[in-house]
Image 1 (cartoon, rainbow, N blue to C red):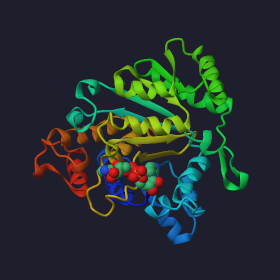
Image 2 (cartoon, helix red, strand yellow; image 1 turned 45 degrees about the vertical axis):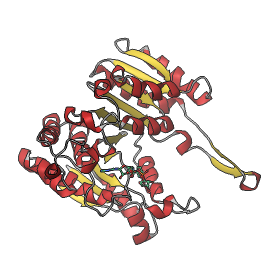
Image 3 (cartoon, rainbow, N blue to C red; image 1 turned 90 degrees about the vertical axis):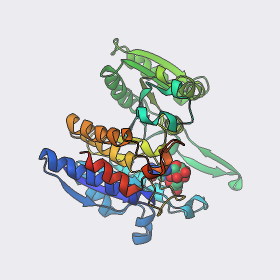
Length: 354
Ligand code: NAD
């Protein structure tokens, strides 16, 4: 296993250490040969080279089997929309260069965290959703322009049929190994690109007669997700809608600090927590490392087909939570003070269970 580790910025630096340690320990326990390289991206890379994705990092990425990424972002760019060179350009470029067109986000609540969400436990219990968010099209990559002397702006929402087909197929196949339900989310009542999306998914559905398919408008999906998350199995949607709905769905899992994601295409897999660099808590040693650790479980499962090893990681997280240990973001009022752990204590606690 040739792994490139890109910790990135802010808490990315703090949590990725533990993702890497967990991966090392699994490789050692199960006798899998593993080698690590490190790369820079984001604000740290801009500071070091002027480029948010230096060529050297991209070259290493192309030669690796899988990438473990932390997060990018720095407060100085958030407050300066006119900055021409920005950390997120690095992330968008690496997704494009590696052809990472499908972003998978499993949303499943550990029972111990039912109280940590702002949604009622009885609504959440049993929810288990797998999102497929398209990642290399839509308004993120369509033409952007300012006209009217800068006073009018537009971002083109654009999709081609093959882009919808390739992610829809992956989503149908995943549904086949789960509860055989697929919900495709769009805004086909208003958007032409959504009408193409819907037509394409409808055509593909003919090849998967065993899958129950539902089409839902994004506004309704946003409401249904909170009202009755259990009704969903696999959800497939475009880049912008997926961005918003998966953050909303993070509340179903209790916290941003618990959610991992996998970006896949035809070759290298890219694994990362869904959270950002969290300037508000960076450097304080309190970030939750579990999303990075769970990203490793996804990597073992998807890139290396090591299902048993992935389950060992998830079970280790489960055991630590069952013993009552929490980082601050997932602590409920009932959590005892001496069970609230720092980033490193939580990382070590999980390692001790592997
Ligand atoms: P964020 O995900 O960084 O943080 C949102 C909130 O969740 C914050 O209150 C933060 O403290 C909390 N949080 C997030 N991860 C946590 C963890 N592991 N443990 C405990 N608490 C956690 O989103 P934001 O505040 O909107 O953005 C901060 C920066 O991150 C921005 O510069 C943004 O551009 C960047 N960002 C990067 C990515 C990425 O790298 N994929 C994703 C989103 C945002």
